[in-house]
Every structure is written in structure tokens, then in C-alpha cells.
Length: 145
Image 1 (cartoon, helix red, strand yellow):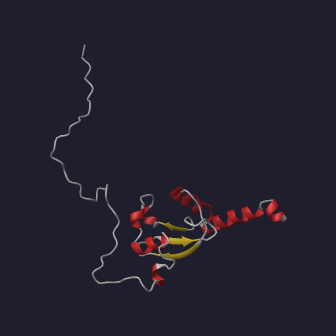
Image 2 (cartoon, rainbow, N blue to C red):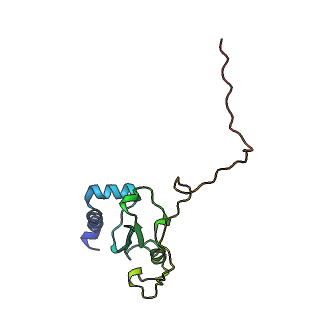
């Protein structure tokens, strides 16, 4: 066993490499706050929404590809913001990123990707005219003396 491994200097080197790739101490703190983990990897591509896709085969299969969502969404990100072509790459349906895939269909009738807005004020929510079966309990008002 080498002295470097014995003193865990290889782990320290990996730590500093991760800090450097994620934008220094401040950038790493922001990314840790947003994504709850820091990783280092190779940038594979960026989609038109600003999401960045990374890969590092040092990590376990299933955890070695990931997306960093665009800064504009801050903490309001979810999986529906990933376009279908990148979804296939993230979930190992193909090993080719969308810009290298010659079999990716491109038809004039295909619409652009849109994220799912369910549960947000931007989504249409119908108003119900049916009275509720359960009503909230309202405590009685105290009597004045």
C-alpha cells in the first residue's frame, strides 16, 4: 500500500478536484444547497433549456449520469424539465447523446418539449360547484362577560 493511500491523500485530492470543478468554495456551497450532493464528471451536453448533462463512469451504474438543471429554475426543478431525447440518454436507453444519434426522428409534426405544469398556478384548475362533504371545524367564539 502506498503512502498516499495510507494517509488518504488521494481522497483529499479528489475532494479538491470536486471543489474546483464545481466553481470553488462558494460555487460548491451553492450547488450543494441546490442539489444536495457534489459530483465531478465530464460535461456531455447542454439542451436548449440550459440543463447540463454529465457522466462519470467512476460512479456506480445508474448513478453515473446526471443532470444539473438550469440556474433560472433555482429550486423549482423536476424531472419533467428534461426533454425526451435527453431522458433516453439519462436512463440508458441509448449510449449516444441526442446530438450524436443518427436515428433520432425529426418530423415537422413533432411539437416542442414542454414541462408538466400540474399543481402550479400556470395550469388550468377547474372550479368545482359541488358542495364539499366535509367542512372545516370553526371553534365557537367565547362569550363576552
